[in-house]
Length: 282
Image 1 (cartoon, rainbow, N blue to C red):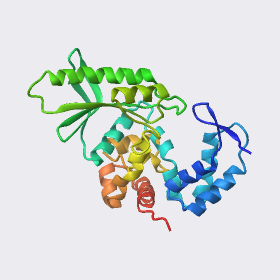
Image 2 (tube, one colour; image 1 turned 60 degrees about the horizontal axis):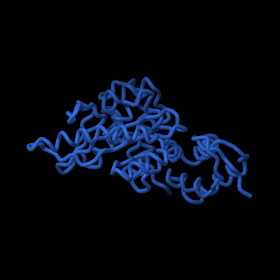
Image 3 (cartoon, rainbow, N blue to C red; image 1 turned 135 degrees about the vertical axis):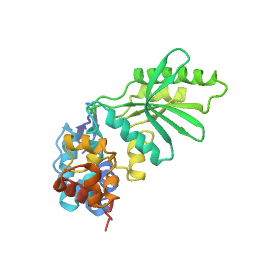
């Protein structure tokens, strides 16, 4: 008998144990451990239980097996911690693009045909330019709607027209992007697919979604580390520590010197980053 649960958006859906198993495996748990945890969680699920409570139950059990896998499973929470204003999310996504071979500029002013625009991220690759707007939401239940897609596409068209009217333009403005840490509404996706606007969001598109871009290259934000709190996050970002691997890739003494953090706090973060980035599934 199926049990109806409630997603962050407020929509109801039947609980799918396979989805839970797959998410645990992606975090680094073995299939046997993931199935064992999922079965224990399934036994505690009651009708109309919210997915955030299911996540907490699964995470609590996962932590008993492996702390690194627990941190990986917390990737969505880590991205939500890149707020509240969203500037840190823009910086984070800009760094992701650099890892994928793009040159990027953050908060760049671009002349449009009609007006000047400040864009969150301007990325270039092989002489092609991409106008990128990042929409951060602190509430996972709020999908990015079609009005946002319309707005971003309109700005892209104005910028593209300006570049096309400049014969000696160094780049070809190829595409506008909408990047968000939540999902997009069905209408936003339909409009984007129709107009050629690229969306990078949670679970969409299937092979190039936000979490896939992160997981494929292990580009976990420092907020995924258990001991990172808001004041520490500000210090880390100010000193260009955006990925957990930025910490794991250097020795502790260098990390202390570059971050300016207290030695004890830096040591704790270094151990967590090493555990996360150098974890190998048995």
